[in-house]
Length: 102
Image 1: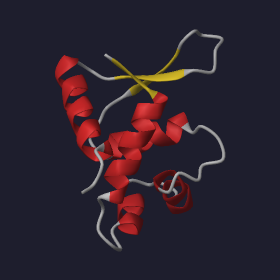
Image 2: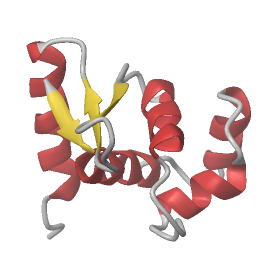
Image 3: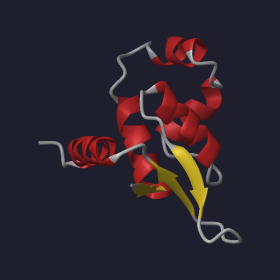
Image 4: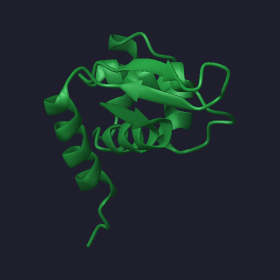
């Protein structure tokens, strides 16, 4: 039940873009997230991979995901979802969020 960093990043960006005008700052305050970092994540302007930030945003969006580095000495980050149902839901939502807009 693992998901790549790239997929979780796309998911987080898509969900953040769904917030209405003026809702991002209150969202950040409510979940104790740094507004500037979340804006950069939302707009794809992070200077480097930020798996812990993505994990915190996912948790704030109701997606409990644990970080996993594999291999242990590598730099590849994966996220482990709690069960198959959570994975299926995540994948369905990701497909919706990344579908071309008409």
